Length: 171
Image (cartoon, rainbow, N blue to C red):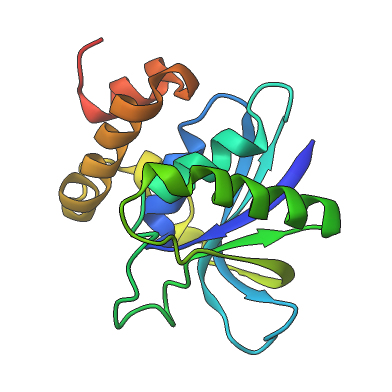
């Protein structure tokens, strides 16, 4: 089992995306700070995954394609586009993966790879936000389109039964 952190958009969206993947054993949603800036927390998730079932390359690719990984918008302090690594080997690998995936994007990827610093878990009522009630307006309007994109681009890595049951999509 390995762990990595991802930030870049709303942690409710990011949590739902990674919870929908085969090989992801758990997702904790909240705020992460990097070790180089320990007081600056951004919305993010910690992902526990089995690299034999879903490699880091796939997780990073999913992350880059499901948020604005090339956009430096005004909300970047709250939604830092980042991969939070646990160890230098993981950091080097994540950087190499992003460099290799750059060819899939017309604009420069701004996603940083930084060392994990600390994590603050969200309040219990906000955990498992999407899967606890996918009928919520936010889930319908904001999360569902991202999950539909996940199904379109990464269907071989998606827990089809779980996601299609929630989104109402047909197989």
